[in-house]
Image (cartoon, rainbow over all chains, first blue to last red; front, top):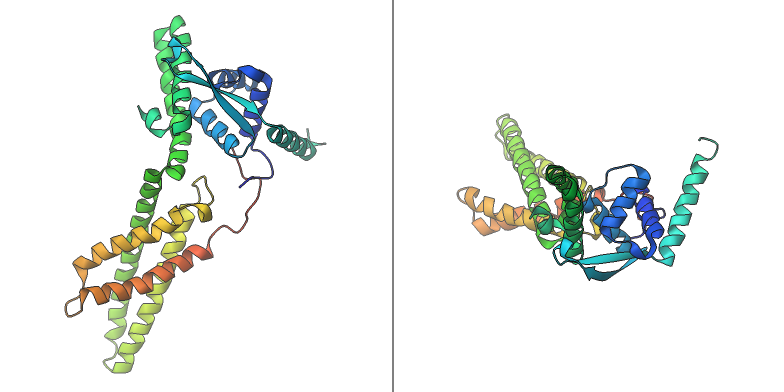
Length: 103
Length: 198
């Protein structure tokens, strides 16, 4: 079931993935959100949201390279799909309309 | 260990790899700070991952269904005891067959109401689960678990002079439709809405 609008954290995550482009994997996305929004984000909350967004078709993912620092585990790179970008624009516009004249 | 168990299987490796990578970065500055960061991550990740695990994994769903069924069963037993005590009071007021029929009718009406309220409570208790309740197999598992508990418990408390299986069957025929009715009455009706939160 797709909701009409994205939640606030979903918008933040999609924004971070868009910003990072080809380098968007879990740790980088988490750091980008912490730097950009000055809020603490747990890796579990991030992956929960990314998994949900992927199930809705708003992000896609592919496995990347593994490094010794990662204990030999592969990175999973995320990218925002066209549907995800359109949904982000729609949700952002709705939020702007809602707050117009208030802030 | 906890995160490995709770993480969705398709992102488990990547998530643990990210944790290890960031831990190494923090550990270059201070081992103690890296440990603190790691435990904060584990604590912050437990709640969202548990919610997803409860709604998505088969074990998690059975656990939720079992807990809800136990809650439902406790409610029905408490209701049964209350009605039986009140019914005994009414029965003592008269000795004729009309009075006995009246007591039994009132008993069954109250019993059905209790089962329906129990079903509604179980349905409402399952609402916080991430997936819509109607699309979740928990909806089917709750009555199933309730019936299993019902059978197990009634095997022990079947009144003297009654056939165990006839008693169980009659109770099950009364309980299950009433529980389902209660669940249907409080089911979420709205299909779409801005209710997603990260």
